[in-house]
Amino acid sequence: MLINETRHSYRHFMETEVSTELQRLSQLLQQSWKMVRTPRMKTVLKVQNVACDAMRDYLKSEDFIELLPPIIGPVTDPGIRGAKQVTFDYYGREYKVMSSAILYKQAAMSGLGKIFFMSPNIRLEPLDSTLTGRHLTEFVQLDLEIAEANYFDAMSVAEKLLCEAVNVVRDSCAKELEELGRRIPAISPPFKKLTYDEALEYLRRVGLKVRYGVEIPWYGEHLLSKLVGEPFFIIDYPRGARGFYDREDDNRPGILRDFDLIYPEGFGEAASGAEREFRYERVLARMRENGEDPRKYAWYLEMLREGIPPSAGFGIGVERLTRFLCGLDSVIEARLCPKVAGIHSP
Ligand code: ASN
Image (cartoon, rainbow, N blue to C red):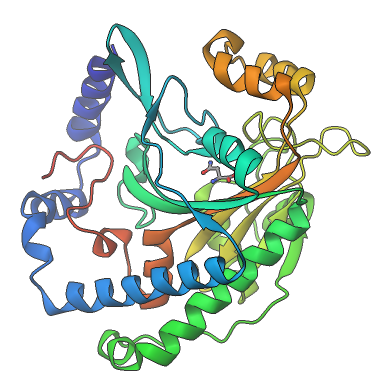
């Protein structure tokens, strides 16, 4: 079913909206295995390595434990903003490839306190994402979770982590950045915080109307990212815009205690995170509200019924971070054999 649907919309897309740009990208990606031989990609991947090491070192110095990432499970993150999950047959049962390991992060933090994964994720993004320069269907996020933390604690880790990556790359990759013609802007914590309402108002003033209650579209984030000029958080999204696991504020019904971190210079979203709803009854209600079938989440709900600590966390996309650090047009330059929506490539 899923494969047929995807095929149908792909054909429609190719028949009606093929542009030279798409053809060019498609041609390039047919031989994506050759891209890694270019000096430019070697330089980009060197910077990526240095950034990943810097983030790992920082988190380990803060007593985070790195775990091997789960890749499959009976359910995965449903809060993936218009993308589809990959479903496959696992010995007679429907299983999913991780769209994000959020549910497992909560399990892991309940035993270990502060954890992170370098987590490979698959999301079948919509066809209009192909040329954004920001969307891959296969990507990696550094996904972390902190027990007994609130969303301000998580934002504080996010800004320090990003600054650490930038500072280490600036110090150790001067030659590489010069080769790429990249000057990373100076950044330092704390980053500005705009509420979702303020972000919508900001966009309205520059002529982009976003309906209240829905996710800010990527081009809205792009616009804000160009206008604000430094990294910043958008916080307090309305309930309904995000997954059932983002915690609703007890004192501000309808408002979630969550955030996105946005890069400056038009690079758009860097990270996305939240304080978690961990109370069984609340999660059940939110699942029903979002049209999720709670029976599919049996193991997760059992874990919540038994009780887990409150927590907060976020995930930062590694290819998008690389794009920002190196000043790339597109995330396709930030990984081996990149996959984008609608293009069949190696
Ligand atoms: N990593 C995100 C989080 O921690 C979830 C996601 O990727 N959708 O909230």
